[in-house]
Length: 411
Image (cartoon, rainbow, N blue to C red; front, side, top):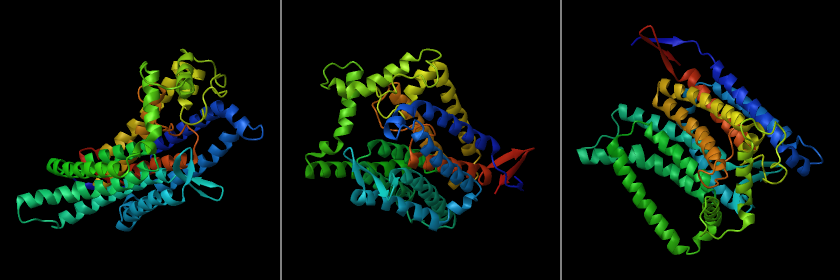
């Protein structure tokens, strides 16, 4: 079809959606975090709101800057390779210079600034995986990586299309797992799976590559458990969350204390007590230390207590509209890189939404995953808005649309 270059334009609906959900999130955060902020700061109920506004302004600025950059910039080998090695370096650095909080080393403190490197790794690996795949496709189109036999060619595809990229991402993911940060490990695993699924890799590459990585994984786990027989202590919080989930789901055989189940039980009761219309914005009872850290993991429960089923449905509907916009960008992507970049960033945001709400509905055990654009958190807010900016970048300079039988390509 004829290619017609289109003047680059911002995706106005996506920009408006970003501002809408961020402003909505700030209102929710202020309503929920008042008592916690009053207790933490010097009688300042807006403590968390003020800090979140700073993070949000930085994140929105980053998102808009990224959105106006050409998508081809990010697929340059120097960029996507740097994204990978920075992610790997940060994942390793946390192990040695990270500060331990509640038994986990997930944070690096640079003066008064607190950074959670695992959030950076999520987006870094998306860029690296998409850039690598685009590079391999380009080399293969030039006649590279040809084998002399069909069997060798199959293994050639398996190695370059699956084993090498997925294995490199799993290397970073393993370091994150041992922080320990099991929820981030799972999120990155889902992101890598979805990006690879949308990369165009063949079925034989999936089969041969998957078996190879599975074999290496089994050997690694067996060796680790043999060398470290007390490995369960490293993941004690995971087993505890599983036990709490079983106990709160009616399994009387699990031995947990009432104090251990208090957080989950109170959050679930708060969610259910909202009824159809809720107690009223700002009128939650559970946020007065019945649910600790209400501004983070369990913010959805407190929000639904205040606004009811209707309020919860409105927020979920906003997420669904945002997701539909993201899917449109993925479907219109005009290159492997653009498609994988949009897929990875969409997966990152959507998976975190699903995990957070599923936990608060007691569908799955607690994961510690915050609610995107609503929960309090500097690293998460900035990085998630950066991911949103990457999707807008693809929408602006990496998609194509059909007009009157022709194919108009945005570049």
